[in-house]
Amino acid sequence: MTKKLPLLLCAAMLASPLGAQDLGAPIGSEQPVERVQVEGDDGPLRGTVTDESAWSDIGIAIPAFATDRDRPTPANEAGTGALGREISRVITANLRNNGLFKPVGPDALPQPGFPQITAPVYDTWSGKGAEMLVQGYVRARDDGKLVVGCYLYDVALKNQLVREGWVVAPGDWRRAAHKCSDLIFSRLTGESPFFDSRIAYIAETGPKDRRVKRLAVMDSDGANHRFLTLGSATALTPRYSPDYSKILYLSYVDGNPRIYVYDIGTGKQTLVTENRAPTIAPRWAPDGRHILYAMGIAGNTDIYRIPATGGTATKLTDNPGIDVGGSYSPDGTKIVFESDRSGTQQCYVMDADGKNQKRISFFGGRCATPEWSPRGDQIAFTRIAGDFNIGVMNTGGGGMRVLTNGWQDEAPTWAPNGRIIQFFRTEKNTGRSGIWQVDLTGQNERRLPTPVDASDPAWGPIRP
Amino acid sequence: MNKKIATILLLASATGLAACSKKPPETLPPVAGPTSVPTTDSTLTQPGVPAIGTQAHFGAAVGASTTIYFDTDSYDVDSQDAATLQAQAQYFARYPQITFTIEGHADERGTREYNIALGEKRATSAKAYLTSLGVDANRIAVVSYGKESPVALASNEAAWAQNRRAASVIIN
Image (cartoon, rainbow over all chains, first blue to last red; front, side, top):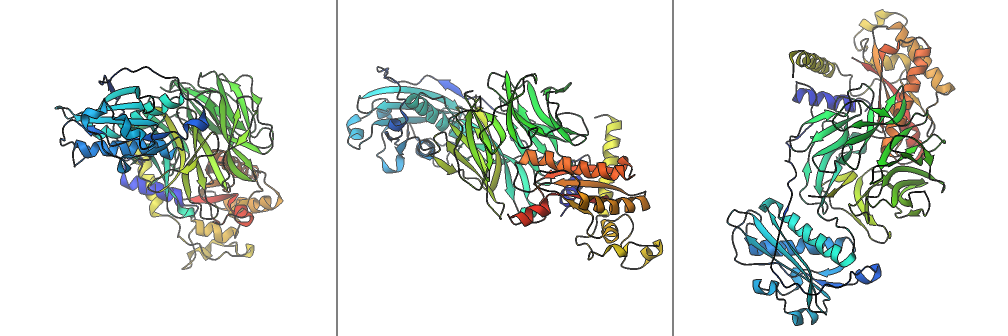
């Protein structure tokens, strides 16, 4: 058993004699989605609905998106008409699965024709009890790209609240559905978008004592899943760069725990720092220009900062305790981290240069894996008090709330809009793990679908 | 890549392959008591006796004492660990050509990153104690697996106690 990792490393060496490698084929770099003007009436705009209890009960009808002409597309073998229905299904699942609304999807609704997309037959929808109506269309351009239009109507007031359109490559059709979901969500709640985003995580297979842990990525709804490493070496704790061009993660590929910077476009990786010491707990600065990591020198782990392009590392903590896992405030001026310098794991805040280190967690139990919200006002963390649960607190350590009640809920990561937290939940005895999410009310908890067991989710920002 | 680096990589890779071909057996021989520490090397030439430089030989020589165990959150070498490490130090003094890795581990009831740091601290404690007994620090590598490689699979105190450990593993 103790030889598992070295043996796996040997397998990697056999596969690749010129140095240890555990990387799969690259998946290609991130492409921005182009926005286009879409036609429609500019009705009077209404005030934003912000009361949570009210908007969670809004009835939203999302009939199949129409098409001007049913044409073949690589996005759907049955053509653009069938693709329109799929897009509506994705939007319906997004809004329903996150506990935000109670949408009715295309399979239970009549299908509007293309001319009705910009001129809805309101009486049809008010008769079905719908308060909001999402319509849209798909049009295949001659260059093969798809134009997707998205419209949100207030059925009672009989006017259009918002509309937008995007041009996507056929392979990116789901991104148009996510952009439309974000448009609806933001217009109805006044919150920032989060659906068009990706998640890096660790895919886990095999028995508890021979667990295979691979770096993997997926869309926010679990679609477009890809493995990035092959599994011959244990991979852990990924973090997407703010521009989605790179992933920081820990790999045992050379036999020791070390942080690598994986370039998504080229599929190549480099060490975060050339050092014989183990490096763990990688984190990006909000502007992507610096990287935090923890490094053990003579057994003692402290937090360091290094420019993302390489160069000289700066030691930020200097303490005989274990200091690990820094997370920047969104403005980049502060870092929250954990330290056991008081005897147990607790959360501390320091300036970005390491000055003014101050403990903030005083609520009993332990505070581990703190992550600063993208909105800046909250810190999520692993609360250890008997069981492991996900907690949130304000940035001074007050207002602590526990959001989950699993046996071992660990390592929170924030949605780009700071409203939802993902984490991983490990089962007692079996060691099986899955990614779960919970909203800030603690009311809406669900497991994310993943092809195999999953841990260490890291939610990236809204995609360009 | 320049030629020098390529050569180093080839050498490193060849070393790795050599290590693979001489890996210890999957199952170790039954643990023997401390009295089985070989008094003469002639016993090693007998058939069925593990060769010097293998984990099996080390295990047979020091009994169950290839591994030390820690209290929750602790990285201290207690008196029982000290006795274990003294047996290891005698073995490594007798076979000065042997190099080894101390693998630090934690139980599952800790967060992932903290546990890697804790396993590093445990392995380093064991290394420091062996060094204090005269084992050359250059013979000892240290690696932490945190909670990623448990030996006891249940989720209870007994299993966790077995997983909070630092195991000495011979480098072939």
